[in-house]
Amino acid sequence: MSAPPQQPPPGQAPAPVLEAVGVSKRFPGVVALDDVSFTLRTGEIHALVGENGAGKSTLIKILTGVHRPDTGHLRLGGEPVAFHRPHEAQRAGISTIYQEVNLVPLMSVARNIFLGREPKNRLGLIDFASMHGQAAELLAGLGVTADPRRPLHTLGVGTRQMVALARAVGVRARVVVMDEPTSSLEPREVETLFRVIGELHRRGISLVYVSHRMDELYRVCDRVTVLRDGRLVHCGELRDTPRVRLVSMMLGREIAEVRRSGTTAFGAGHGSGQEAVLTAEQLTRRHVLDGVDLSLRPGEVLGLGGLLGSGRSETAKALAGALPLDSGTVRIGGRPMRRLTPAAAIRAGVSLLPEDRKAEGVVPGLSVRENIVLAALPRLSRGGIVSRARQDRIVEVFMARLRIKAASPEQKVGELSGGNQQKVLLARWLCLEPRVLLLDEPTRGIDVGAKAEVQALIDELAAAGLAVLLISSELEELVEGADRIVVLRAGAVAGELTGDDVTEGALLAVLAEAAPAPPGPGRPDPGGPPPPDPPD
Image (cartoon, rainbow, N blue to C red; front, side, top):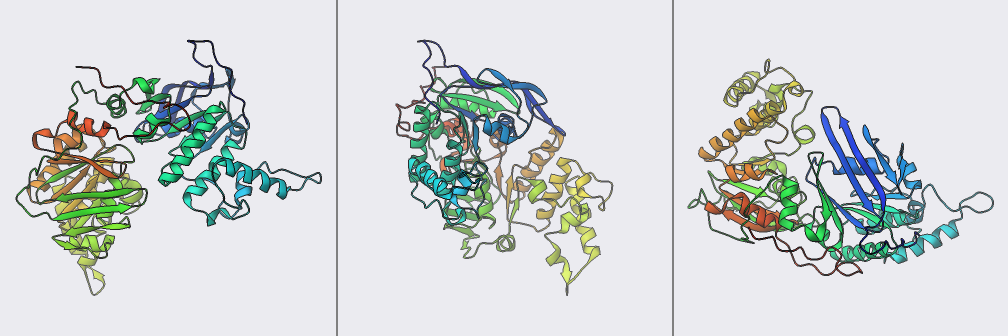
């Protein structure tokens, strides 16, 4: 294992161990990184944060040899380096633990830890006794008592994450990159991980820590780098960066006055006085949702806010029957849904427009007509035969109503612009005449004109009595489009804003609100509690 670094003279920062200098990376149609510089100092724990599409994953892949930068370069220990493959980065002492454990489930724990570097005996064969002994020693240091001879797939997700960590630290790493390492861990396992992070820190190993959980960042990290839209927007000491400031930089919102409203509930907004058409009580799913309560009234637009990983999309999927729950109740029209599946939700009048329209929405190879009527085919069939005339009438009505621009209804939907693809998806669900419409990032990735049209359509639908749940990462879109806003944090409701309290400042305050956290892992509160915001 790496030895502790030499302490720099008083007042002098530790030397950089890994640097990205002026790095840019482009993919077809996308600038993933634009002249980004990043410095990881010896022995520090460095937070890397940003919302979806900020460039975090691309930067990590460049640092670990998955991608090569188009421009710019890397330095390791002050010397220029160029990694062509991940194996080269690993041999140089850079290990990565991904959110999704990328090990071999059918192999033993020990084989996964030493994969590609198995100890050999004098005959050149794998020395299993030595490998099992070393694996057991590494696991014991992480508080894991699993038999290193067991197949990996027989262990729980948390233990598998610890095996991935054992593999990372077992290669004599100088740098360990942790991508959302606690996303699948139980609280007890999280505490073990933090203890291990503290031990790695004492050994002088430098860590890049990627997480959307603010409390974790302030508990374990020394410095922070913020990316937004592929650009570097901030780098500095985390203890000197108030949470509200960090959130505003991640979201790109400069708020002069932030109301410290905390967790609030101001009563009902638009649609009050009417019975809720959808009510969710204590929606719970392990590691994802923690007792979410909300209600939707006819004619109301309910905004669902939160940072990346807060549980917004998971809540919408749970309401639509697409995410099985451990516990909780969903009532539609006052009646509890005893077996909530996507088909049951659709029959009850609940439709979901998913966040990823390409992966979960449109079928690119099918025509506009086929995409629009896809969900309505059971209603359009008689004796198993679908009426083409009925299809054409529906398609004609909704193409005109939503102003879908296509050469004809027979044009492939994959050839349309992003905004028109989004309208096709809306048409698919509106032709079912739903009572509740769940919209997950309905304006993401579409141009300004199409965005305005979709926003106007949402207002029209609500005015016609439809209950709408609106999820958006854009604060302005939520504030302008919603009657009420429920804010999620770590899968739980953190606050609710209504009426005159639906402002960007109040929303940002709830997003940035801190939860109490114990001191850091094995060292004196490395991030420290964030200082109060300076007076206005």
